[in-house]
Length: 400
Image (tube, rainbow, N blue to C red; front, top):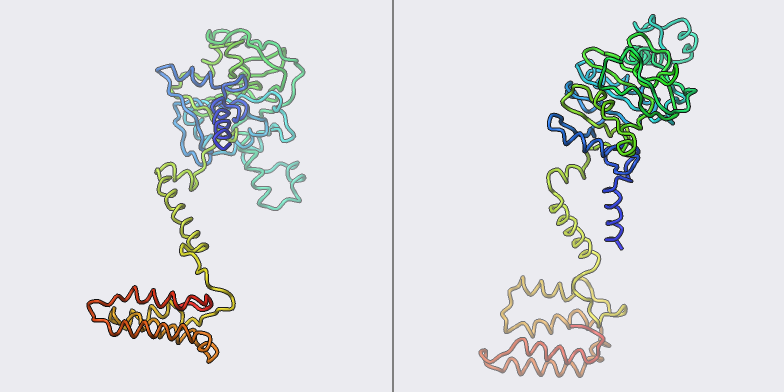
């Protein structure tokens, strides 16, 4: 059963169904694995995946293109506040954001920021709406708006009136031969309130769906549909020119997986796999299990003749007697007699016990007398002890 369950889980991860839509691990129509594997076949490109959160990634190589597929509109706000992304683009990187057309415009959409707010000073309207917030909250909001104003330059998102179909390349980019004149597009959001730094690339009617802007030494591309990156589009509507334009002249392409929830977390299990300590911890767990089992269930079986009514004092038990014998270092020939005397001291506590064992005591003393009269070289201590033990155990009440 466990083997079958493991096989099903492994099969699901191999096909990619366990990963979110747009992931480069998915091989079904909603994934981007075909594009990922195709770019890997190009010798001049270095293609990889990013599993590190942006705030922990440090500096991304500026000679690369970072692809964010299936992004929701509200995630643009977090990108603008991430210093690593801003440093990557301003240092010469290319950021390509392809959003999910069903989740372009959300309740927390970006709104255009006026130029007089870019210096971090609050406007009159902002002061009136934020007067109930603490001072720290107002400062953080002004910094967030200033970061958005720098990064997105007034870009706003809303749902368009178009019903999809084909997006047409703007006339200003007709000299860019790699860009096709028409590309398929699905119904969804549009880009509005863009500042002059944004260059529209594709539009449906008067509504812009793809735009590009320079930022420092790099560029930012925002589009409201990620269909052309999916495996389904690779089969039905392959647009190599548009994808080549998205990659640009960079030598490295990174498919980001962190915004989809596929991120690497450095924990104990990760460190164990990294340093190949699985065998060590497996043996350690087995040893701990044996110790727990040994403490809960003794390996020596309980004595069958012991009952609740036959209690033996701790200082006169068999274990205590054996310890005394070892400490006193008795000769081997004297062990039968000493064991018999220790039994008498621990079990015959009253005259009633002596009367009960009267016959057995006589037989045992006779055996010891015969043992004492035997020459030293012919004495058999173990046989004598077992003989006395068999005599006493006839009553099956007390133990030697």
